[in-house]
Length: 294
Length: 279
Image (cartoon, rainbow over the protein chains, first blue to last red):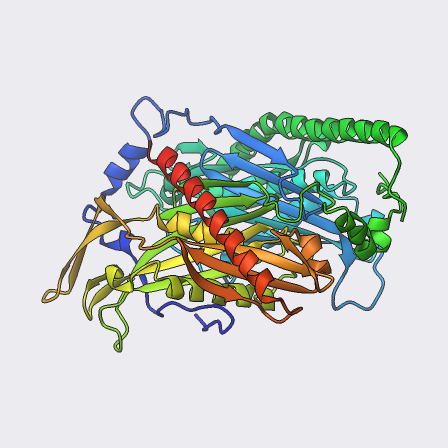
């Protein structure tokens, strides 16, 4: 890790104290904790059930548009800024650009993350951009770039999907011209079990292949969807799995996105109604009072 | 969808004159008097992945503090001292002023200010963080992330840091020096001892003469000088005045008195937040 001369540095070799916890669990214990015999997960959900989502727009006063999303313990905040000049660019481009940055806060994961973006965060930034680009009307702001910044405050699984949904809402809140809202969902696969919207422990389990050798399917799939146009804008898969597994997963993810979509729509509707009411009261006050002359 | 056109007003064309007109009536555009503080709200312990956390809002300014604990070998020259590493991050998320890339000058100055405040106020004794002299010590990474920059950043950072430090619970560690084996028990936890509670208050000087307390981002950018006073209990801890218009003795004393009164109020707020977190 190159020393960052612009930040206060701690000691070079630190270890997380979680490495020294006494009980290391065996594989069967791990599976037993995550899923009980009657197909119920640790937090009481069924296999294909999503966690409850809380969304709010307009949380950052300095940004043109912003949104905050909470999916149980996963917390993501996203802000979007007005079209600005593209730095380091001289030639004209007919379509505008979308600049996305995804970051985990240093305290958001079980292990402390450094401030400098690592390769995982850079990859997630790219995925975020690919998910949002098809939905934005880029011809409306030629030669400019719209900045989207997503910050994960706490990661309890499905952080990337939550950021995509949050960023879609923030873009709409910033009045950036769009074709549709983008929503995303995550599916974790382990053997013959599929976990919709996995938590951090379930994600950890899905990253290891089942040792009994019956089926080597394991992995995590994140998919972003534009429900109004029935289009899949982004599909990312990690791990190894059969083709049948992938095709059935797409169906499951599509249904999950269709459930989240009305929530996003409702949130935008609420913020637009609030803004219109505010404008109404402002115009009423203007007619009755004198403006301060400049 | 076209972008809404803002009605052309004095605020955008000639902001300084706009402010002068308000200040002549002893009031600010957001309705506050020159000495009123914005409402402060504190929430602790909301981030479960961190050992200690706090979210503070002063008006619109929002700062999140997360504290993560790790283990490391103490420095050779200070064998019974642990580490406390504060860092202030001003991501492009919080304001259009900041661009992606390495920390801006303002972020570096703020990080240094927080580090100095921690040392000056002797808030945490680094010897409390040492587990076994020369072999094992705690490293507390205190990361302050600004989510919304609307002025008085340093005030919010100090409050968030102190509130978060008071919620930190470190697990018990047993270290066997001969076998070089470490055992951590996550269930038995003990609270970190916080010896003092510093509180910072920011003032700006407008037009070389008028003092404004707790400025917003707009007021900070129009001001001719800025000053932060750090107070702990009834003692003055530090005064940070990076250049800017000069102040008279009387004005400085006024600022210090205002900061003392505010510190009482803020400490009560932090205590309430901590109590409701424990229950």
